[in-house]
Image (cartoon, rainbow, N blue to C red; front, side):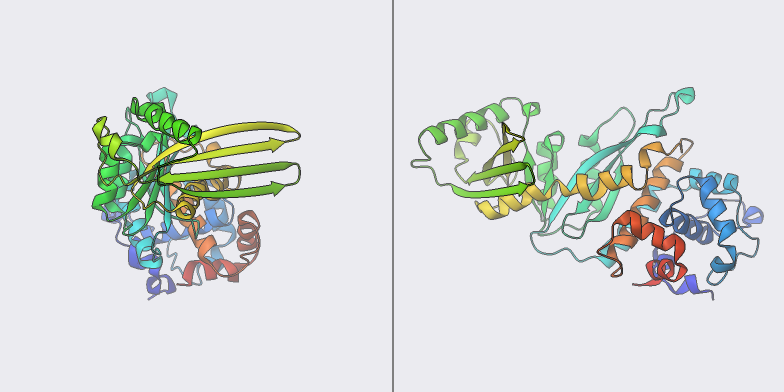
Length: 378
């Protein structure tokens, strides 16, 4: 038995079925997977770079992989990840994350989508892939992802992602695109609560709740049960004041035909930002199944932005996801899952936590002991 057989990586990802003809299986699937993962952690951004990493680190890789036929070519790497079923690959990722991470009570799980901009193929009429991901805001770890079907949108992908997530007692936050009755119902079925942002995509709901809070403000919330929280942040020449109101006075919504599963509260966030002497104001409205707790409401709405800062920004700037030109077969989707896995391994490791993800990737490329820690530490 080689060392990789005794790790949690093998426990979960060795389940991926190998559909190659037996006599052509020169490189075991788990070895191809581990070489790709090591390369991406160490900074590789394409199949060619992953294979070059393998050539340069072959002696070290042999310390825990058999590599009976050496390092596979980039054509082999590309071909294998093009045909690996991304649904099965994603399911293995989900099982691994659910075994590794126990979500706390009322932890915020942010769900949002991101387009892989260079994954389109005009010659085949293939549009760029759009992935919907779920992020545990406290740890910054990706819980799972789901590709949006072609000629569809996030509205159809989010319920499918929720179906496979273990989010009992968590708070699910989604932007206005995901503010749909079916999604709210699905969240309730999973034993979770929701805080959903509103915009004009819900008919008169956004307008009606906006008018409700305008009238409530004008009357200084007289006879309206409301919880209130204010947070002020100062950063150099920027001052931002955010005020939060949440109320359980929602009976009138049902009377007006706005029936939502589990709806308990509605909320408003007013942000006033002063930057270099210029002040701007923005009001945002939400529906929620949480109790009227202003601190919890503020935490949930603020934590949602973690998916932009702790995931999408890192994928674009550190992993250069938007520049990846994987286009054929399932390659782009599987490469995206590999990036998520690489990011999770880096984030959950206890070493160098005060350093940036970019710096930790470089350390992994320079320090083989650290990379081995990322791979094998449970």
